[in-house]
Image (cartoon, rainbow over all chains, first blue to last red; front, side):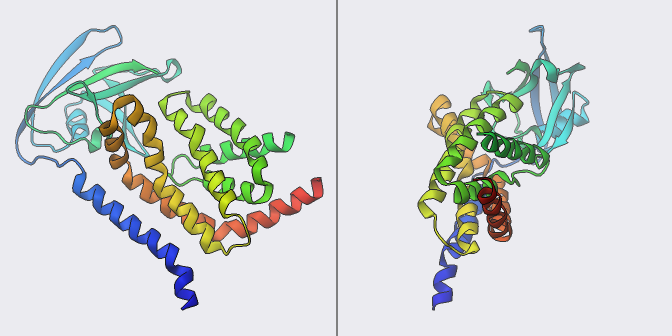
Length: 129
Length: 158
């Protein structure tokens, strides 16, 4: 009985972890299967903008950007870290980075974990922090 | 003060070295050990450490989270302080790791609205789970040995 009492906090922690995993699983953005048309707008450092329209059956933004060779990046601990877009490289020594937004809103996941749906409009903007 | 600076630098160096492992970090363990050995003086280690984090990674919105996350953890350890088995510290450290994302989401919720904070937290849950597991294992294995070593060093110095 004493041993069970000692293990109770660790057991509660394990249960909480499982519940959180379930919460994440059922609330995560769902990828859309099938053909989709998306628009990717690139805003360069000189504020010039270009739009690229893609028809794809990929499920995540990162896959599209890499397959279409619009972007290059490194696989980091949180997934794809975009370093080059449309030939322009973000200069780390100038605190530059490629900001990914969808319909003007920040996305909460990396590009390779951002699902895409038909009609989505993404923006890749060279930003400074 | 020199010792506090040294221990703060050690925190930063180990954090940077383990940065490639997502949310597996020795900082939670060391803050736990420092607090157990030095008590409230741990604040003199945390303040320079938090400042150093800003210098290395930049003073972005995320940095404001560190201003309260590490002191909160130290406070939790101070409240639990006592002769407790490693499993207790492992559970506490694991729980801290599980809550890390929620605590960090607060500035995002303040600046972007409640749902921005909630979505930030939800998206980071897998990393919180890693953080929980990493903290649990490290604390279970290393709390007592590290405390013994640090206490011996402390007693030799003072």
